[in-house]
Image (cartoon, rainbow, N blue to C red; front, side, top):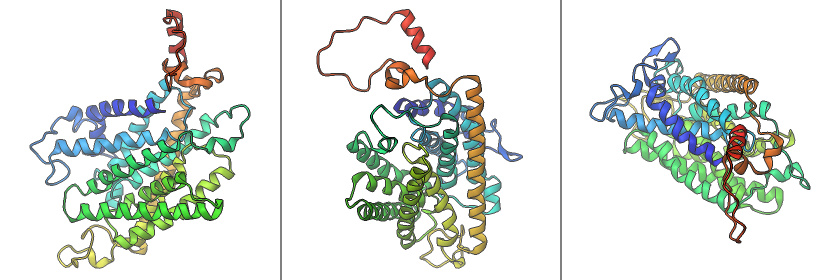
Length: 399
């Protein structure tokens, strides 16, 4: 799974430079962005403004590339150990073009969702709903993980290394200030609000999740606390720069209860989402997108000239029944589109070449696919002979 994440850094960066950035933020051709507007970063430089006023175009393109990279990588936590490396490369390439780019353009690049009045501050729609529901769709093709002999399926939900879970959560939490705070595209008050709101939602959510765990299991757990933090951060993402701090705190509590319930539902129905990508990221982003229509500032903040000083982001979005309906409709469309297109995409790839590794390779995917071990033994063993050309050819067939 780690190599799947790291290779995403490479392949999406290449696509982003060649045409993906242009598909997201170029001029519209019907419903989609023009891949030729900024192809190979043509016209994207450090001395002129791009889509964001006051921001060098090259800086904006580089920053937005981060979202394009992290979004497909999120899905790997769902189908862990069930996706061959070669088909994975084909999948994320086509997924970035068919799923990520359209929604990025529709919401952030001046497309129809933005014109319709849908708001997404830092990726509730563009990142979390698309990745979460796409991840869920892949499970219809790749199925469940094989349960090792002597274990029960529920044992697969037990983390292999709890300290690594905590470390990963810490890195993500820190990085989220860049996702949400950075989406203000400046260092003023809006960035402060987005950053503080992210901390409040994450903090309230992780503590609420821990308390639910404590009541249910009679013990507080570090893993649950970490998952709760991610649920709060994912849920506040679409609303971070549009709501008051009190609303972010409330959203964190709601996110913990909502996502916890969905995680339990996932287990009940036997959905083998290894890292709860759908219930935490997908449904968290869905919830935050919808509740923005309820928790945003009132309508008096819509007029920049007369907006009170306490308004978070004057002239953008205000809470109302109409806004709630727009946000809900956008979330449903995103979920349905991402799920359907991803299922058809993975199904098509699987018809050409198997997506799931062969059963005989599952015992050690690192070695069978990449010729590497997760850990090098400290005990001195006999040094194996150099792989023969036949061994190398066999490994390439597995990948």
